[in-house]
Length: 344
Image (tube, rainbow, N blue to C red; front, side, top):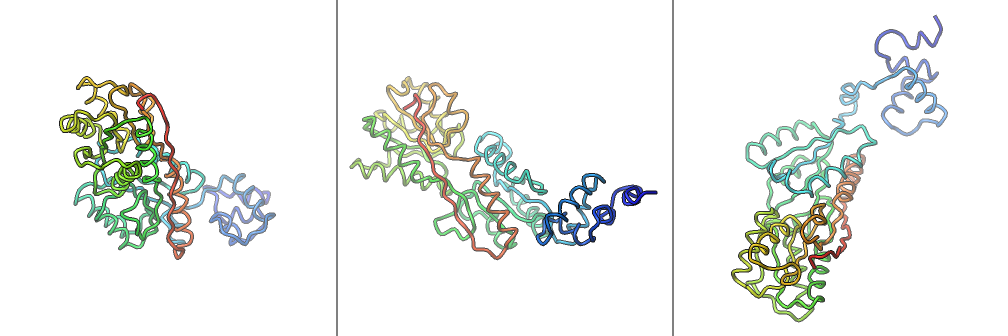
């Protein structure tokens, strides 16, 4: 029997078989398989060729025991299945995260948490160290899930933040600048009664977009009126209801900055029902640049936030924190851009 046939052996190829075929020690093969440093290019090439020839597949369970790694990360969304499916933002985040980890051996687990029972189940899952790190989006103030993540000590990166003093690493769009640019644009069109529909005010993103609205008005010398501020929850239905409330309180409203595209689509329905033409009677600007913004009637002017890049940046930060748990937490703010279409 040839040495190469002996190296193959019978059944599933082993680490030792790879070492024999490559002409290196077992430890060298282990370092190559685990992505460790300290292997010469020549030895690494020999090991990789042997792995390919033998069809060697690492024993993931044994590796996890040896390295205390789960080879998985969790993306936690503290929302219902309905909200996850209806908001394009979440799909973009998932695409970004999946794209960033596609060249790694990590599995991505999607976990929805919206009830106390689900939070208890999540606590047991995280305490069991079944993932190496956690990503979380749709961050609400005083969310017990964030406190749970802090307690576990797992590497964690948020998409969004609870406040400017957020101690956990996060990636956030420039909510303030994006909202400011939207309202400045409406004022620049000569609109006199500019209203806004906010997201839920227990989310920092909603509060900061409202602050951007206020700053733009203040800088233009326009009084801020409570009657021109209505509140939604980022859903299409809430945007429709909030727009109807605004029209009832302030029939003279001639422009609206809406804190999400989905709510803006709902606002359009309320405006059409009230016989208001867009943009002739009421100009409308959203926030997100979700795919639906290009397909509303008329197409929606909106603030583009790089949601997919946000997912990629979150994953990159998390991979860095998993590799170096003692590193300092980091914060990344991504630029936004006003995309002008027919609605304003």
